[in-house]
Image (cartoon, rainbow, N blue to C red; front, side):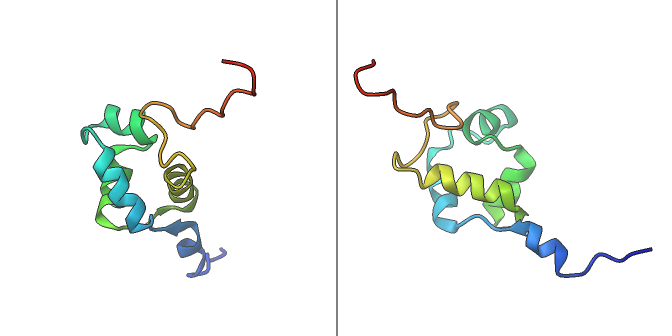
Length: 91
């Protein structure tokens, strides 16, 4: 039976940047499952960990940070991922 190295688990988890968490809290209209999923694409359990400063899956943390550090500052609620701008000359 092979044993997973102790260093393997922490590499898959990380905390979300506290500045991003603050921006998320400021833009969150409510802390219920549907609102969290529509707003950020995360579950209530994930939000509890983010809000408390606990580590979550690295890919989810990176996705949240990328969205909140976009040139637009944040994507509007329910628009994950942010839609690209239309090509020049198109409405």
